Image (cartoon, rainbow, N blue to C red; front, top):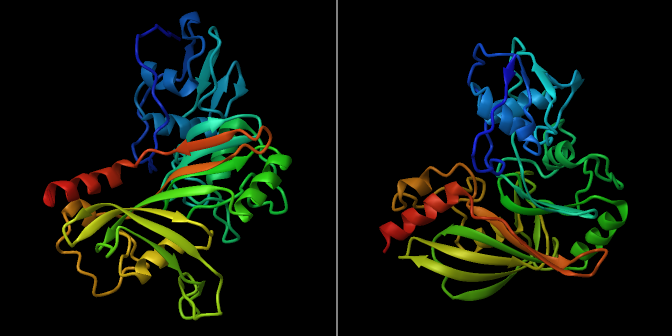
Length: 345
């Protein structure tokens, strides 16, 4: 039985990216005793630092799958704080649980803020905002529940706590409600357009003007149901976006800020594409004849739309306090942005 020794290491934040765990489990000890000095530290951090072997992501997966016990009680929260003196045991399954039952990669999610009414997260690209009827089991609410406990279901059981959504390929700030009252209040705030949203996007092509309003209704494309398109006047749903140029990269690309005043599905992707400014990495709305050969390799390799929900501002549903939350620009978009700056300096 191993005894945990204290090490002077800085604390780390949860990983912001989606990780598909593929490393095999190694032959390691299967129990340990927590020393008093580790009081207050996260369970997954201690396992990584003292036992090593698998990555922290794999340890988290093992914990969530119910293969770790604390004082002979199954624990499923990787971030559970330790008291010191506990006895931790675990078992290695024959097939390590690297994915959920639907084949979705196990991910970690960063919580930007949490109080008794709300939780604000930095959603990674590739993660669903909520479960759908197709059977996907892994989404933002499920990961929040694992860390903070139950969320209110409201009228839609597949969307516990959800008051708005981001496209699967979009990263950034997403807020969920922790009570039914907060859920209803935030849903009204979004419906009444009292929430200010700021997105950052890297576009293929450069806007003609430093800023412009895009007023164009949106409807489902009957030929491709997964797509949306600009509707004829008087048809579709009204959609409004303010677009501002933050930086131009020759005549090839631009960094833009977008402020949607409505919340239609794929609104920013459709509006920008309609102006000849498809978002980098967005295969769904990029024209077939789009010239990408002048882009640096980091931009051509993007496997997700270069669209990030950077900031949300709103009044707190209970206190009325002005709230503003920001999510940092993801690493893959930062690399693409820096490559553009270097090439077009």
